[in-house]
Image (cartoon, rainbow, N blue to C red; front, side):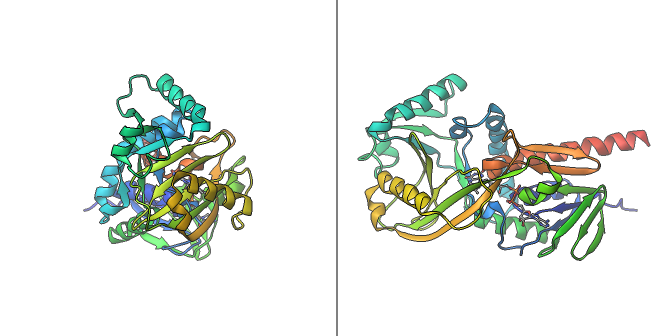
Length: 355
Ligand SMILES: Cc1cc2nc3c(=O)[nH]c(=O)nc-3n(C[C@H](O)[C@H](O)[C@H](O)COP(=O)(O)OP(=O)(O)OC[C@H]3O[C@@H](n4cnc5c(N)ncnc54)[C@H](O)[C@@H]3O)c2cc1C
C-alpha cells in the first residue's frame, strides 16, 4: 500500500509562495496554492521587483544575515532553474557599481565597506576606466572607476513567475486562483471557496498577512521600464549617489528596468513626478543615449517589511509563516524556503518519534 503524501496548503502565490511550493513539491509534499489574483498576473510585489540577486551590493544597507542568506540562495538558484523549462529566466553576468566624479566618495565608501566586511573576497574587482571598457564599453566614457561584483545575478521576474506556475501545475500542484483567504489555522485554510484541510498550512501572503503579523508594514517602491535600442549594457549597474541608490537591470531586447525608490509608506498609487524625475535623471546620467529611450511602463508596489527589516520564518500554532522579505524577496526566497522545509521536516520527525 502506498503511503499518503503529506499535504501543505500555501496562502499567497507571490515569489515566496511559489518557491516554497516548488521546494516542498520536489521533496514529496502535495502542495495546494491559494491566491486572490489570477495565476499569471496580479498585485504581488513580485511583479514589480527588479529581480536582482545582489547580496554584495545589499551589504551597503542591510545586515550580514541578508548577505549570508543571499549567498545561500545564489547557490540554490541553479537547481531551481534546472527544474523549470525556462533557462532564460536566470542571468549571471555580475554587477557594476559606479559613481560620477563628484560622488566618487560614495563609491570609495562602498569599496571600503566591502573590504572590511568581506576581506580577501575573490569575486570583487576594482576596475579603472580601461577595465570597465573591457566589460561594458558604453559605460567607460561616463565613469573612470567601477567595482565589479562577479557573482551577482538577476532573474526576469515575470518569466520566472510564469515558469514556476507552469512547473508547479505540471507536477500536480492544485491552485485556487482569484480566491481570497480569510483565515489560517493549524491544518485549515478558510477561503472564498470553502474550508480546506491540510497536514500543514503556510502563510506567504506578504503584506496581505498584516492583520496576523504585528509590525508588518509596506515600503513603497517605484520602477520605470524603458526600451532603448541605442543602448547595449549587459550587466546590472548600481549608481552610487549621496541621496539615491539607483540601479539598472537589463531585460531582453534592449529593455531596461530602472529602480527603485524607497519610501516609508504603504501607498501603491502611481509613480510621483519627483520620483520619475529623479529616476530618469539618473538614467540619463548613466548613459546619454537613454535620452531617446521610450518609457514602456512605470510600476509601484510595496515591499513587505517587519520592524527590523529582517525576514521571518517560523512555525507557530501550526502555521508556517514566511514573510518580511522586504527589498530582498528574490534574493532570499530560496534560502527561506529551505529553512521552512527544515522546520517542517524536523517537526514531522519529532511528531513521529513521539508516536
Ligand atoms: C519596487 C520594488 C523593487 C524590488 N526589487 C527587488 C529586487 O531587485 N530583488 C529582490 O530580491 N527583491 C526585490 N523586491 C522585493 C520583492 O518584490 C519582495 O520582497 C517579494 O515580492 C516578497 O515576496 P512575497 O511572496 O512575500 O510577497 P508578494 O510577492 O507580494 O506575494 C504575496 C501574494 O499573496 C497574495 N495574497 C495576499 N493576501 C492574500 C489573501 N488574503 N488571500 C489570497 N492571496 C493573498 C497576493 O495576491 C500576492 O500574490 C522589490 C520590491 C519592490 C516593490
